[in-house]
Length: 538
Image 1 (cartoon, helix red, strand yellow):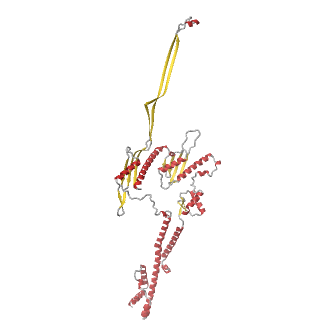
Image 2 (image 1 turned 180 degrees about the vertical axis):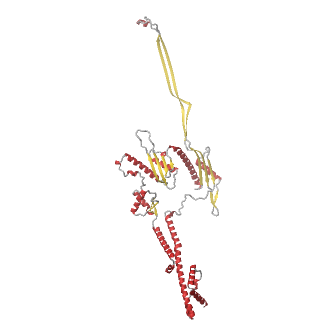
Image 3 (image 1 turned 45 degrees about the vertical axis):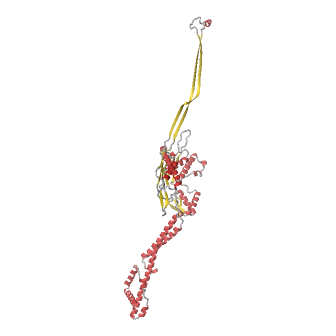
């Protein structure tokens, strides 16, 4: 082995030493990698302020950690994750960076705080709590909430309504649907007194307007609510039909689709009817007047005689009397009246169309194969009648129900859970990593170590063959000299080369080395061949 290494050139020797160093380093890395603990995320998307505090706490506890994603992700050994999260929560980490909630009042002394500062801190606390709540949504990374709550002035009747603005930073390329946006608006509206959902504006980090504030979107809100009502109604009818028929046909054997035409117009109609035949005297009012007058007839001529005291009595005329009477009676009748207010609310179903697709039956033939069998017309009619009863079929409304029997395509149960590799989920990353490193090690052994060992063995064998050939050449020369001297007995006792050793396949490198020996020692080679020839003749 040492002799073969000495015969190698400096380039080959340096390559072998470098390869050995690389392999040793690789195996050291592999052993350290396998023995090192598996790291798992402790926190992700941590603000810089909280990240520095958490790292300092981990250093004080002597726990190894890794920082990734520009320091926003902290990894610790997987078996320490739960314990460290509880420990960090005990000391108030993470504290959500600059977002503060009602804990702002824990460290303040209200004795020397002005009313203005208390109101500002109250507004900050409410905004912070809402931001934390919205940030807990799975699709939201962070949120900022800005509230504008006008102060009510004294001696004023009109009051400005509060408004709110929300800026959302979404996770990755995720987007919020209409339901998620509506839920955020209602969440904020119910947390702030006097705030309406229509007064809340929501934008995302890309500058897209998710919800427009103001009364101008009322029509759009009504349209969304109408569409949502129609979709929910169709889903309810579809679920009812499928559940009903699955009780008989089996799970996954029924598919139903519903199309509903719904009228969302709200109509109010008032009617007032009078019945002249049914009249009742409600009140009677009577007035009676009697007037009587008495008049005396006197001489209207004015004379001196008439003006004397005794003359007035003598000249008294006759007395004339009159009487006037008037009677008035008023009767008020009450006529029966019927007032009808007919309100037609929104959401009236105008027409309903239901399409039901059912699968057939399957039987097993003699070969064990499943054979499809369609359902009979009588069974389909029974199913159609059952569907009509379930949806409230109305002929006058123009409803339509169709039940069709067709073979379903083979599919697996969507609710079936594959538990074959369920036990590998927790340690799947570690197992894959170990297999990859093991595969690399095996490839390194097969592609690097094995050729080196084979080359070293081959060099040792070639060196041994050269020594044997040189020894044989020396022995052949000595035998030939003895034969020339006539010492044939001693020559017959000398050891000869076993020809079996060089029979069969010979490597090209060995062939080249033999040619080199022949070129270097032509006389000795000729003597060896002659000795072999004499040995065969004997």
